[in-house]
Image 1 (cartoon, rainbow, N blue to C red):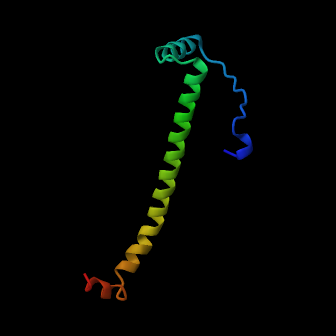
Image 2: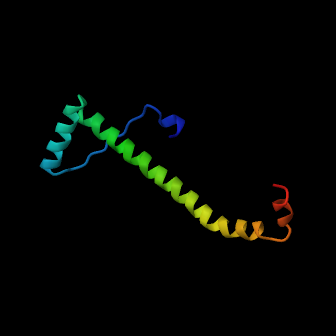
Image 3: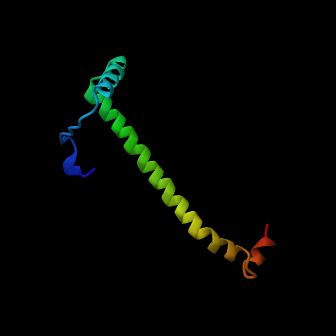
Amino acid sequence: MRTQDKGRKVRLSIEVEPELHRRVKIAATERDMTMRDYVVRLLEGVAAEEASRKDDGEAADLARVSAPVFARDWESEEDSVYDELS
C-alpha cells in the first residue's frame, strides 16, 4: 500500500443474492462484527492467500528453471573435487 493511501478508504458496492446477504449477516452477527468489518476481513484473508499462492508459484517456477542448471553443475568434473572434502 502506498504511504499516501494509508487511512484512506474507497467504497466498494456489490449486489448479491438475498440468501448470501442473509448468510453473511448471520456470520457477522455470530462474530459480533458489522457486516462491513466481516466482509473486509474475508477480503483481506483471500487477498493474502492469493498473494501467498503467487509467491509460492514464483518460487516453484524459479526452482523448475534453476534445478537443471544446478544439477548440471553439481555433476560436473570440476565440482567433483568438492565431493572429496566431506
